[in-house]
Length: 299
Picture 1 (cartoon, helix red, strand yellow):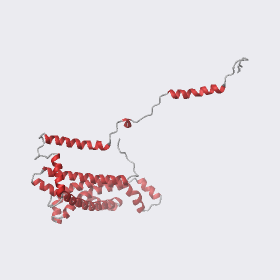
Picture 2: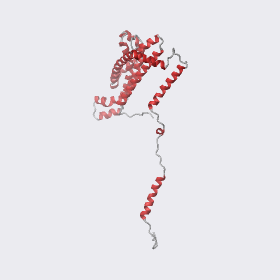
Picture 3: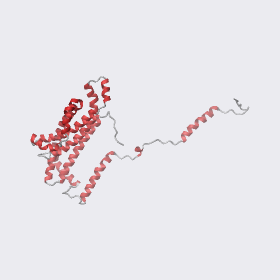
Picture 4: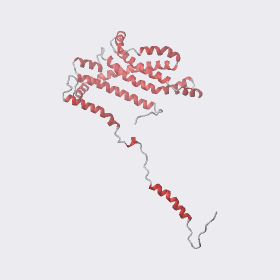
């Protein structure tokens, strides 16, 4: 290998300057590149407030309803206009009839929901935690849940009379079965590997139930509670239309006799509002109790 020497008198190149120029070239090239950050398509969309999106549907429905009523397509004897319904609701609140009926209906739902929760969850624990309990409890419950609870109203009237007891019994029966099915499914849906891990850590039977099985069944229990609340209001509608002298259903029966569609719609709106409020409370409780479980919330 030959080494070339620079002729005498020629300038010697500055190695440090050459290396600096070579090192500067990549920096200059990187500066020339126009790098754009990758932005997800979902974040590039125009964000509309969620409360606005959720209220758009009801507002459009009310506008269509008012338009049909104003043009005469919907007559007052078929369905009262939203303005008339708002006026009637204000009058019923002013004279106290609506608030008194709401208080009575809420007491009935609360009593039936409490009893149904105790019975449904208790039976689910017995049937889900013990095989003997499943053999004894599950088959009768599966048979009874196929019987329409509305068809038992005459039998409840014969057993309990025409007071508050048959109404609460109907609500209790409607609440029991959804809670039983969901709590039972939640208990039996717990991963067996979690049970084995708990046993390897030295947990007792009660420790497994408390720290593994019940937390694992909690999502199913909350789902069952939401179903039960919906059925509780449905059962209340039937219960309050049979030998009732108070409550929202009683107001509906009176309005039916006098062909007052405005009062009937007011009562239906109250039912819907109370059901929506109950569902909101359960969903808030679900978010509070299930913080440990990350879930998909939509995009």
